[in-house]
Image (cartoon, rainbow, N blue to C red; front, side, top):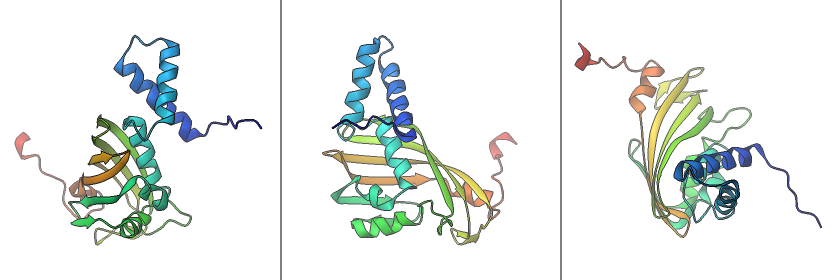
Length: 193
């Protein structure tokens, strides 16, 4: 019985992210050592929280709420401090994430693309800086936004145990999102006047 060696686009992007991280960590790695680093990180990803792991987590977010919830420990706390969300039940977390799934036709939150900009941390704690591109089909934060697009940056702080998220606190730039949908005036850069 042969092993399936087909590589998906996501695996290729993940492998490239791991290669870039490995090269950044040690520019002197030879090809064999770099290859071993990539394999170890891909196959032990749950043990090595890094840019590639963060990339898998955030890509899964807009693909499947069920799969995203698998990243979390049985006992956890999720907080979106801007929205005042405090969730410690996996079924409630799944419902909260479900609206961000990209479906056809688009779900309540429209079409969502998330990208990781950076990851800083280790196997115990991590900070993920990300960007969210949204194409809205209805209201956004109580404001009519159908047909409008937003690009928002945010940061997520994680605490991990045994390769799972036990604590998450997310912060994101709602002010710029509300400006982009026309609900708020642009920020006056008073320091430049």
